Length: 490
Ligand SMILES: *[C@@H]1O[C@H](CO)[C@@H](O)[C@H](O)[C@H]1NC(C)=O
Ligand SMILES: *[C@@H]1O[C@H](CO)[C@@H](O)[C@H](O)[C@H]1NC(C)=O
Ligand SMILES: *[C@@H]1O[C@H](CO)[C@@H](O)[C@H](O)[C@H]1NC(C)=O
Ligand SMILES: *[C@@H]1O[C@H](CO)[C@@H](O)[C@H](O)[C@H]1NC(C)=O
Ligand SMILES: *[C@@H]1O[C@H](CO)[C@@H](O)[C@H](O)[C@H]1NC(C)=O
Ligand SMILES: *[C@@H]1O[C@H](CO)[C@@H](O)[C@H](O)[C@H]1NC(C)=O
Ligand SMILES: *[C@@H]1O[C@H](CO)[C@@H](O)[C@H](O)[C@H]1NC(C)=O
Image 1 (cartoon, protein in one colour):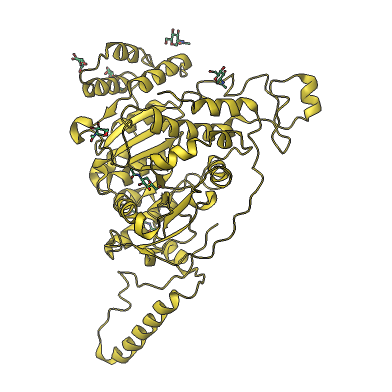
Image 2 (tube, protein in one colour):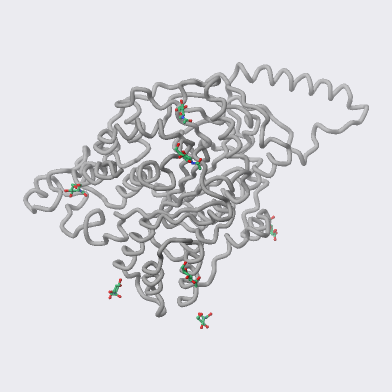
């Protein structure tokens, strides 16, 4: 994981440690000042590690639900408060909202179908009904709030959020987006692989920017007993190949490079990532002439209020700061949080999946070159989309992915409980609360919205070795489905 390097101690605004002006401390102040200058000079030359900040933010954060709510402006509380669902009323409301935003579109079929869902009390979700809704949404491509904020400009930022089921994190992401400067100019595309009324209601409640929902059509939810979900005749993960051949299970011939058979739940995320990227760049009507940046987020990310401002600045300065950069990254994984020494600094290096897979953006030019490498992405035996993308970069792209990266992150990862973190306390709001506090300190000490960007000398770049994939992507059906998603449609 990435390490903090070259940090200089900065006084917190509320300590006043360096602000006292008593005369008898005059000499001491001069001395401290000299030390600071010395430190600043040294900081360009040395890299060192400092764990003080982690302790600091631990002490500050109060992660009770009330405390977290108190950090959110009152008008945004609506995104954090779950509605108790009245199984007759809210769905109808959603339909009305959709209906009222459609102008000039013949929507009678849509509304009529929508009113048939889920009205008599609680029922298990009706899969065929969900499928129909998904088809309809995807055909309709309805952009919400377009009448308020105007049509998408060709050079506006499009933000694509990959959404699974973690609605509580999504609530906080939405709250953070709502507070970002210039959010009203962008289009936020929510790409869902799980159809859920509560999530839909939440997304359709958004009133601060244009919104479009798209639905991944090959989900496990809509294919519970068949590929791409789990087919009863699929080979179990751990069966030996000889046994698999004897039992004649579906994918007996195609274990992954570690000898394991497909696990549907681990393949979905990569499929979804590939599908939505193709969908956004190559299929949606609203993006047909789009030449601007597309920023990739996930449901458990959280943005700083200057993230679009910074992204715009990075885009402007690419030509002179880093002409070879073709991907802009707003997030890094940090163990500590007091990085705002770096608030206006960027660096550049080859794109590395494990470091730069969060909050990155590129435009159609970069996408087109990635898409030409579909075969590399889709047949590489690794179920991680980000490792697959790195593979594409290293093995296929003529112009490899080269990233400009903010040193003070503007996108944070608040989801402690992803696929790989089973043992953590998943109810905990600790990270959210820490991020709130870090941003408050940064805001109060005017470290957001820097006036200019500075390129720093790149920290040591470890040669990223060519490596075998992580497996989980040996099944030919997955290769084929993935490749099918990037067949030309227009
Ligand atoms: C956290 O904040 C809540 C509400 O603001 C307060 O009631 C509680 O005492 C605080 N807890 C700590 C440990 O400071
Ligand atoms: C649910 O909505 C229906 C129709 O709008 C209404 O008649 C009913 O009283 C509501 N139930 C509750 C518990 O709010
Ligand atoms: C739904 O949209 C149609 C056509 O745009 C309109 O005639 C109808 O009044 C709308 N219904 C509601 C309840 O808004
Ligand atoms: C699911 O919805 C469809 C209509 O889309 C209906 O024909 C079917 O009977 C429903 N199935 C169940 C189990 O409710
Ligand atoms: C986007 O670009 C296309 C083609 O260049 C042009 O026809 C269209 O008017 C532009 N749209 C906007 C909103 O500027
Ligand atoms: C897209 O990004 C590339 C760098 O990756 C840049 O050279 C190009 O000018 C950009 N295109 C547009 C239309 O901004
Ligand atoms: C991919 O597309 C081909 C041709 O359209 C089709 O025969 C095949 O079944 C598709 N494969 C998957 C996995 O969807």
